[in-house]
Amino acid sequence: MAFYRSQGDVPAKRHTRHPQPEQGYRGGPYFFEELMGAEGFSSDSSLLYHRNIPSTVGDARPWSVGDLTTVPNEPLLPRHFKLHDLFTPDEAAGTDVVTGRRLVLGNADVRLSYVVAGTASPWYRNGIGDECVFVEAGRARVETVFGAFAVEPGDYLVIPRATTHRWLPEATEPLRAYCIEANSHIVPPKRYLSRFGQLLEHAPYCERDLRGPAGPLLAEDIGADPGEESEIYIKHRGNGPGGIVGTIHTIPFHPLDVVGWDGCLYPYAFNVADFEPITGRVHQPPPVHQVFEGNNFVICNFVPRKVDYHPLAIPVPYYHSNVDSDEVMFYVAGNYEARKGSGIGRGSVSLHPGGHVHGPQPGAIEASIGVEYFDELAVMVDTFRPLELGPGGRAVEDPAYARSWLRAGAAS
Image (cartoon, rainbow, N blue to C red; front, side, top):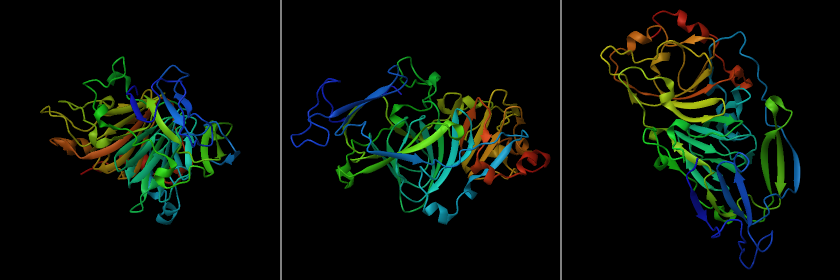
């Protein structure tokens, strides 16, 4: 998003000589300027100043990015996946946020994965699209070439395409992360932005709510040798499932070599607790809950909020057909009123596909009348192309969910 930041050592004028200290580093007498820009020099960008030549590759070998095969949602059904059943505690202890992701749902525009991690990830760069990682539980330090973040439950971390970074979970508890990987950029909704890119008054969050990286961050700042050989895991386009393959580059220096940067393209964090819900006298449609968007999909969040206050209001959603989209809901906390009695709980993901009429479970309408406040937290992704089922989703599906509307009086 077009919100300018400048950190560290940058020259007064862009694209000019920026001398390194007399002792120099591996590359030469000047810092090396890298333009990291979106949409072919036609959108947001940042300039990063490296000690070393950022194009350097010492060695390369394939990286198996995991099972990304998908199968169609056939027969067409609403589905329920229990993500908390995907990892045992022993598995989580040896899993990292990058290589341990298990694909739940995906299409040509976006992939939704889940991971429970207890160990540090390798250095990683997604060369396909932006990532938006939602922290369900646990805490971590995320180190990037722009600087570092401390992330905690409720944080979204939006990471631009090609940003080198790694995840370091705290040892106190496993890190649970819901990973939204785009084949495009992930940005705030256009209707919330001025024509110059500022978040407008009617937006449910503003620039004050966004946390930029603390930096710059250099190898010696974390006790590492600036000249140590390093590996970077890169996800990129290829002929694998979903058109995705991986490569590991070996470089003869530490990735944290950026002495300064400035611009409008960089990772940032936003905590869902800072989202100000938009409410009304009668039930508000899902777009009021939107927080980000990508090509052919949107990200929304349902937060604790006062609900409809018309004297005849029905607070839970009306039944609706997703004519143009598949709807995916990740249930994080609280009691999601419309799904009571369906088997859905914390850590669940529901898929309500286009072509299926979905809405409250039996009895939920009556139970919601007179309720003034919903204590619920969920992350929703709506896609405008059909989603297919990934191996992670298929492994933890609750086959009874599609018939949950048959059980009259299921909600209390």
